[in-house]
Length: 257
Image (cartoon, rainbow, N blue to C red):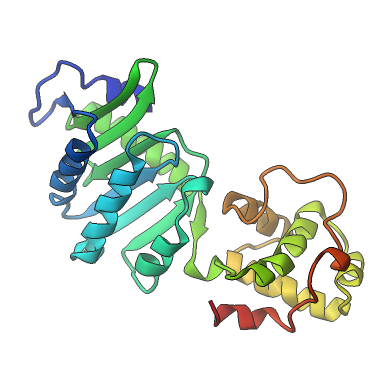
């Protein structure tokens, strides 16, 4: 559907209810994106898939717009696991009521949808890269329905989920993997050389950071956010011999970067 929307631009003039092709030169895409996002009055929905055509241009325009006053417009950013930019989340999502970022498996496209009435869609197709400026109500409605459907089931990205430096992640990953695999607390605590009570405190804090209501959900969300591989490895995660000693408590992770 996304490729179809981008392809529809060929040969059709722009108007209030038309679809128009946009030159796939990077500067042309930036210009079209800037013109469109400046029209936003109520909400902007954004799709950013890492391998999509012109994702960098749209990401750059979005960041500049947010810095220059766009933070007052409700903005939803939907990205793939491999296009999640933690620097963007830390810079723009913290303490901003009108911006939310979520992660999901999404089609290979980059897009802006503005106020549910206009869109810019960039996608790869069988004949190469295509980009279209869309104002056709039927096409916009289809794009908006697709976005809303994926958004409802996407994982919410919170700035606090960034566990920070390498030693911290070396502690978090095996715990997340054990949660996903259903390893008992006793076994996991023994692998970490901590008490069961301490291990359970670690688990509770990780679940809170991920906004997970169950241990299994915490593992699934971690995979969606790129903190774990999507496919669980065979066997048990590496034990303490393969990692540095455990930090004293997870609550320290929230402060330092």
